[in-house]
Image (tube, rainbow, N blue to C red):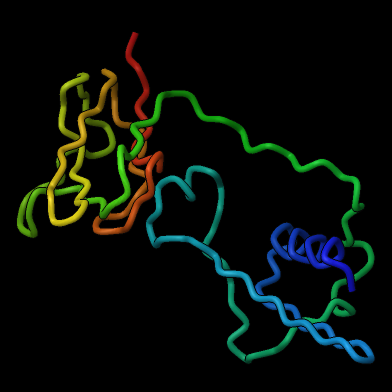
Length: 166
């Protein structure tokens, strides 16, 4: 099996919601498993109409032959781009750990619906034991919080979506 075919299988798994696929042919065997990223109460995923993935708790293995031909996608079908929501994003300025609150018993810096200005501190990103305050950089209303508290972030990770007020 060629790498191109494996990539096609992986793409089909994602589009069909298949979590695990095992394929055995004469002298070839491959098992693919994908991990769904979904946080309970994730406002971004819920606003996009996504639901938590369902899991087969019986341990059943889905084979390529289990997918009916009517569900097979054409190879040359272009991917549909997700609809871009209005607003600006506050992005992580560095690699570190995202904190939405200043301490365990403290309220979050901002929450959905809060009106903020450019200098409002929206979160902390901890890097190398240094707590770095992140300012909004844009005035508006917090539309979404895209990261859960104490999760790792990369440089440029979208943290908040801000809708600018006219």
